[in-house]
Length: 229
Image 1 (cartoon, rainbow, N blue to C red):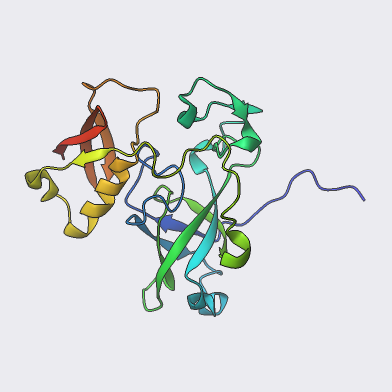
Image 2: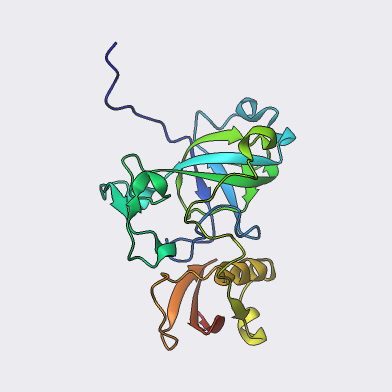
C-alpha cells in the first residue's frame, strides 16, 4: 500500500514562557529546573476530560514545533554549537531545529493544573526549553520505567554539569527582577547561552527574560550581569 508523503497535524496549544527569543534558551529540557511555563490548550482540546488522570504523573513529554525554523529548510548535516560550530554531524545525530520536520520534544515536570483559569485548564510545568508562544502538538505522560535509560550512550553531547559558568548578579541589579525570577535567570546564565565559538571577554551580550533586557559579559568562566533594563 502506498504511504502518504505528507501529513498534517493540529496545534493543540501554546506555551507561555519568560523567554521571547531563541537566544538564552536552555539547550535541552530539564537543564534549568527553575525555568517554568504554562501550557494553554486551544479549543476544542481545552477540555478537563482530556486531562483526566494527568495529575498522577510527575513529568510529561511535550511535542512541539520549532516555529522559528519551520520555513528555513533543512540540511543532511549540521554544525552543533557544542562542537564549536566547526564540525559537521548528521542532522539525525543532533537535536538541531533545522530538520525535515521541525518537531521538538521536551521532558518537563508537572507542577500543577489550574482548572479555574478563564482559559483553563492550564498545565504549569518546569524545566522547559521553549520560547514564549511555541506551538504544542501533543502531550504524553513520561514513564520512568521505559523513558529513562541511565546506561544509554550520549554521543558527542556534553554532560549537563560541564561547561557551567559562575554567575555574578549584583544585588542592585537583582532587585530589578521579580524575586521569583532571580533563581531562573542565574540558572540560565550558568548554562552559558553564548554560541560556543565566541570567546570575546569584552563583548556585552543581551538576553530578553521576563520582560527585561539582561546584559552580561563572560570571561574566564565568569558571567557578570552588567545591566538589566
